[in-house]
Length: 79
Image (cartoon, rainbow, N blue to C red; front, side):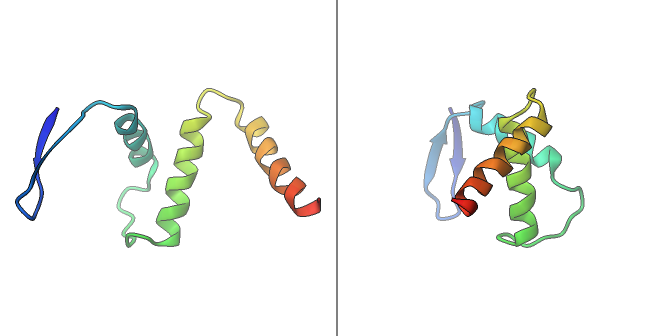
């Protein structure tokens, strides 16, 4: 557990080294260095979603994973 002090003065203890920490580290490493984008921007959102998808499918064949993703969207459009 790691203690944090919030701006309002409240203290909070959080777990460290969780799965979420590893995922965010993976995502942050893949975001463009020096990209000055605002929070909530479409560019930042796309980059985070892309890194998240790569994290979920790391070690898999990305061509096959992308084909499955496109197939699932096309079945919703065409059906």
